[in-house]
Image: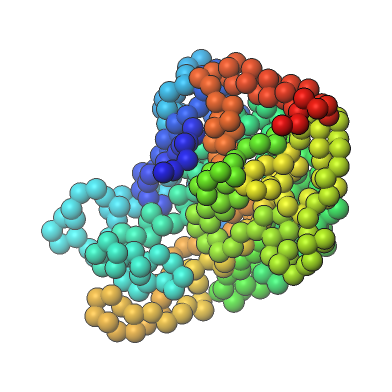
Length: 409
């Protein structure tokens, strides 16, 4: 038995196809939503960051709304969007839906037969009984995340109605670690977006850029680590009662689904395994001014805003590690030709040197989608007005619990 879901989305499209489509279901009616205001800026953020490749100079992502909104407000029906690929005009033969013409120049089909280590190329052709890795890499490409970011932008818009914000910053690129400030900026994205590598550490920024330049010169790639933080999250999202309703697992699964992500931490993460319990767990204190945490607070936040699979009311903090991109321009690794079994260097494709700043934006989208799903699971209704009544009633309950015997079972 799986957990009941209230928000769902799916994406479709290939990297060099006509476009990417997204279908988003579960939105309430009455949510103010405009593509140019709410979605397109998030798509632009995904395209930024030092270390991106030439594709970002070709595309200028915009979401075209097809359904689900009338006169600036959602209808409660499925939302559908499309992001057109401008580069499609250069790929009309290679990505045609029709069989190739007799005598078609093989080069025009842009077939690839030398799978790249670390990519979906080889496992994909084996699983789906293909030989040309183009049939796999087009969908496996991180270009797909543009559609996810569009859906995440809609989820962010819903969460913002209830005072929940999601932001991110980069903490590591390659060998360079940034120093995390003791307190994060109130508007995390405004500050991190001002950096070309989306870090909060100005000194580390220069060294990160230098590391990316060195990797580019060597024809290599770099990965890194980023942190996503959600503020304003109320206590009580998620559940302890079943494995698939725990917020830890839902968030980890969503983040690990992003291309090239190889590790996820919540709060203190792996470091918790090295410390005594007294140095890990967050002391509970009273905070009668914070209704979203039920009148309680944590003296620290090593748990990252989650205990027992449920949000605590403290900021939600998750980190993810992105491996270096699999497409290497010069230091190509050995591979095997799928046509004749001969050995050669792996194929290459236009790609990025480092996409960690962009991956953090994608991760924001996935965190927002998970939070929106959990929020609707707890406060769901058919309209924004109904959800607001449910949410306000819950906050009133938390504020009125008191400390008397009536609360003791």
